[in-house]
Length: 630
Image (cartoon, rainbow, N blue to C red; front, side, top):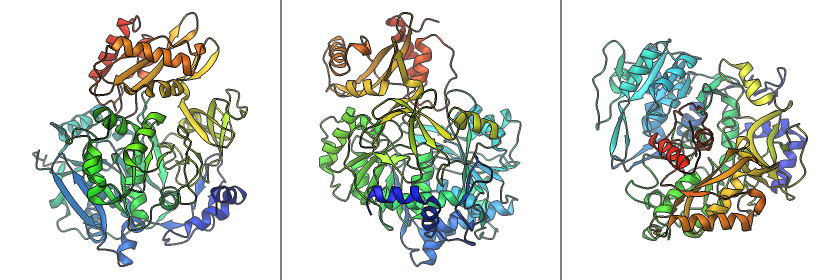
């Protein structure tokens, strides 16, 4: 079947489509139907079915005789460690921790916070929770204490599972002092902490609270998988927005299993047994969906990489991992490739490695500019597919369904909507827009299986945040357009669409222009307040390594380029060269914070920022050009 035929088959009979997809999952009791809409607009999937996530991700592969297959390849250049965990070993380790948690009173429905770096024990802890029906909430390792405290108070966990430390190039991040401070701040006090000791930094355990990972399991019976209802939460994952308290996205069990399993072949064209690598972190949604759950549910080998795209040790690390572990499909964020391109603009490092095993590269996490896509395609010699989704959805909204049909690539487009998603472009009044017209991207309800069901303990906030702006739709918060061929183009966050003298312009479109300049490695465009025109765009550019031309000359060329490509309507007159851009640890550029700094507004210091000093540097640059007046 072609993509169009598959998409129409879903649209014509979504119930049949999703019940068929559910046949690939092991059920303790099969659901009577797919969609439960008695509480619309709060929808549920497979609610009366009984299943277990850990069984589907681990035990069933062992039962099928594939226990010797590698489940996890752990590759840690920061510790110079490589390790393979087979499915049989993963089952044993998961059952051990699950049994110990159960012996300490953790039951179905209890919450467990996991605060760990990129080590196999993080995945073991996640799976162990799902094994006994506990609800895990992974918090990015090294998050500030106050952010961890907020999550402790919201999730009210019975336990915290942690590591003694995380490792960054050149430094050790001590986790236990952060946990100590978070528990002191939090009103809710977890019953106990399980600590995995890492050799680079072992800690003294508190006798009244802390339990050693290995000793904790001594004497406990390994736990069997506990079947849970389809609408039972597998996990909570807190969004890390820069405004307001974080929102605990609730991911129900059954829809999560069905949707993620479906994506591995249909979107990523990955067959069971093949090696799949998502270069992200278990603290983010990509780590949940495509490091831990989807590859294991589908019977793949997943790569767990503890390192960086550059600096561990160089810009060739990705190529080494792909070559060494025979990676078939690779998924990462555009920002990783911009970092590699900046360090190695001519792609010399890849010549030392044979990556002929690789089938394709998939990009997501933030908008992929065409220049980065073209560089990656040329350097790697494989197709590059951009796709778009969110923490809330858990899997692809729009992408290239390569396992069904490889659609023609339009650089700069996330391609087409996946079955389950009815994507619309709306204006501020909720009126559908015509082709090639910029507007808010909204998804007609119900959302498909695998997406969020609500916000933890905050149903009213769920309605207000996602369902109230456009009744009958889920508001994505992104802006874009659908072209005459039905291809979706993500242009910016809704907040990043600026109004210049009455013209609604996409900062993403302007960034495309800047990124096309041969000396620009990375860029960001923000709209600053202007009394005459409402807003004016300002461009920030980071230069490719080795470029020694005068900065003013390059900035002038960028301004000229913008005038040629977009025209005078953009009123783009100011580009400034900076050493680096403020980003979250997952690589998203903090454009909203930059706007607030420029306009002299107060802002919440983002917990997810990679390096706080960058904001001071940006403020200094903005003050130099006449903005950021406090």
